[in-house]
Amino acid sequence: MAKSWGGWAAILGSNYEAIALYRISLGIMLLIELVSRFQYLHPFYSDAGTLPLNLLLPKSDSLYKAVCIHCYSGSMIYLQLLLSVQVVLAVMLVVGYKTKLASIASWVLYLSLTLRNTWLNFILDRYFHYLLFYSMFLPLDGAHAIDAKKYKYDHRKTFISPGTIALKVLITWLYWDAGYGKYSDPLHGWTLNAKPLPALDTYVRHTVAARIMYGLLGPSGLRLMTPTVVYAEMFCAPVALLGSLVGSKRIVYATIIGMCSIHIGIAFTMRNTVLLSSVACVAWCIFLPSGVGTDVGFSSESKHDKRVKLQQHGASTWAKRHGLSTLIIATFACGSVWFEMFSDQCNQSHKHIWSTLLHNRWNVFVGAEEYVTWEIAPGQLADGSIVDVWSKSDEVNWNMPGAGAPCTSTARAGRWRSYPYLAELEGEDGEVLWSYLCRQWDEENRVHEAGNEGKKLLKFNFFMLQADVKPNMGFSATRKRLIHSHDCLSNTNFVEKDDGNETFDFAKGEEL
View 1 (cartoon, rainbow, N blue to C red):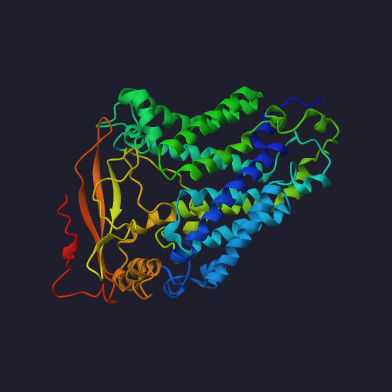
View 2: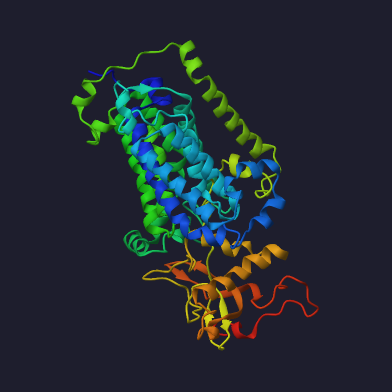
């Protein structure tokens, strides 16, 4: 019979089956993300895209250039090769083959990929960055791995390492930071008396599932539920740790299921959050108690009984085995504190690596959503017709987009969501960014082939449209804001003109 689970070992440590589930699920999520990145290589990572190396590298210091392996070349073949290597490494994590090599290389290359274009960096990348970093200090091949057959010990055994301690501290900080950010919202959007609308009422309305939920709970139900999210985030990890201390699997499982249910709810009710919600659930694997494999039917009791228990190590032996890991993790953690409290380089993500490497804040969705936004880009072709360049449609529709439910997602999802927020770019940076839409349209419509000359894009306006969030799933009248006017036949769109910034007549938008 295995020793009962609980105590400080359960708080600070983990077990090999829990880490195996962590490895497999993280590898699968990473694989999905990396495969999706192939479609973004040309527009966002290659020299033919929106941020060629000749614009990035002059702004970057020598350390940035050395760490960013994806900055060594801007050719598509090189980038496809690197991304293919990352995909192979993710598969190695899933199957448990050479996991130390796979985890280290995956973290280094994911950091490099993020540095290649930090415009695209958002909280999903921060999750991968930290979960991959701490995976380097975990025995990923201890169970349910190709390499696990060379080990002979009880997979249920609870052990303590710098990796298990650091990862649990990270998850505790992550949810406390997210919850406290909502709690301290100056507009009190996550409180019971939020005015005019509680935060959940403004977020849970963008999908069919969200409308069903809204219909079931109603405005009053969402108002009552809103503050529970705050306290669930702030105290979920402490409750799980308390359950570990007293040896209560019921408390630990209930906490994990509860938090994963929140993330699943986010995935169903908010667009473009499925992968983010899934990765957030992966992090909770480290809290799974001893015997989780048997509890969920992942492994059988008989397998464990045939294994030899791992030899116990004293404090001095533990320090020798984990001294280097402790030093690296402590340095990394101190670096995050330095960056947050003393560094003034937060907005220099293209010059230094520190904001990408050390940023460790998780306070997203801190207030109620006051309005929703979407984009359109009416453009004029050589044959005189008007199209929407952004949605790649022959018709320009000024109405709020959506299929079965109001939708605030852009016509281009995924990494394209960062594009409209780069409007402040000027000079050559802005010219290359906006000219890409011209080149993309022309290439996809084969304007250089005989008979397609009339499809050539001459110019476009890029609008951001907004509508205020109103009670009872309502929205205000749409208003528009011109982000940029671009002449595809000119390379001087950002040169100051005496007549000021002129908007093209074809996209005045009287429809509004």
